[in-house]
Image (tube, rainbow, N blue to C red; front, side, top):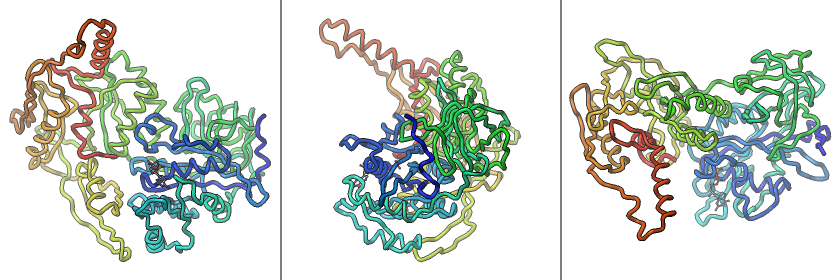
Length: 566
Ligand SMILES: Nc1nc2c(ncn2[C@@H]2O[C@H](COP(=O)(O)OP(=O)(O)OP(=O)(O)O)[C@@H](O)[C@H]2O)c(=O)[nH]1
């Protein structure tokens, strides 16, 4: 029985998002909203239900925005509430800004103990600039150190929202969740759309399904769409027949139609990932419309090379990358090749965490195995005796007090200096209050050298870096030390060296060691022995050989990472 979505007029519809700093409780609040509206059964086991990806469950963070349509009875009327849960970490803010384009309001969740944090501010301004209604929700009031009164004052001061508009809840215990739904209905306006106009649907997200092709998440700005409609993509100008439309509750539920103001999914026989662009506008074949503005493309901050471990896997990996970048359109992809690693790609990410999550999703969702090279930032090279050129030092450009609490500083920074751990250091130095954004200021000349890392005299392609001449020794030393920590001992001694040309600037040694996996097996349980040997063989597949040295492929990421980078 397919639900009839026409029974939800525009004025009984609300589209909203939950935004917050990382760990302030968005996904937990989403669980309670799903339970209270009967979307999912109330059990003790509902933990971050909308975090469906394995990587999200393992890391306990949201990396993908998720949509859920909730049906809620309030004062004798049934409302349709479309909720989009978004990630909190800065590396995934592209997901947040896209999600907001389908909304008229947000729940701004703030931890009652930690108060306003960097991403609280950054996400608030995303919502504010999009002219959305902001409902502040102070969460975790059950915590011993919770101080909702103090947080209320912060919200009033920083965001200019009267403190009596704050809703105090415990998402964990389910305290006061009804007030949140009531506020969504009373304080967020219904979408401004027209059902009588020709169809205008915004593709704000999409995934690739092996059997059904592209599944597009759509927000309808005008008109109606149903199965059998002939629709055109403004981006490709190709025509498709709609096979299925539906809502996410939070799993796919086919419906008869989707109407303007509603958020759902649409399948229209797009078999190629390049056909479904996020930000695309879909319209009816005979009724062309002005396309919606779409989205600014994301700006990559960190670049890394990606190669198949075995070149015969190239095509599989290519298709996996295409499908995953459809779901994560903030990754940029360019073909690349390397002498040592063969044909591959150069990928751009929004940060190191983003890079790791993308890599993990490729492995878990597409069963691939890849080599990632050391992440770098873009340089412009002028080939004058192999010297690379770019800016290095930070120069202060601007200082402005926004109010007693906030000061805005503008600096010119070499991008290299801010990509890896700048954000984490800034956050800890400022007790989490500082937020950080950047824009491109062009290229500048600088005194840079190319540094090689050698294992027993063999260059490790993945770790070739460009460093400022004055920092070469200290950077080389750190890389060698970290590599020493992440290299397992082998049957022979390994010399780890950092070199500029033929000059060695740092050195570490890994002593020889024999790992006998069978040592643990006393006696003759042959199946146990076979199991251990098999496990060791599987472990080896995750290794890359440099000379005769086996290097675990995650060693490269570990080398570049500093502190715990949540
Ligand atoms: N004590 C207490 N803990 C809570 C409450 N709400 C959430 N938590 C806990 O806070 C942690 C983070 O909650 P999440 O819902 O995953 O936070 P999030 O904002 O979705 O995190 P990201 O998606 O990674 O940005 C979890 O361990 C929750 O159990 C609450 O009301 N009280």
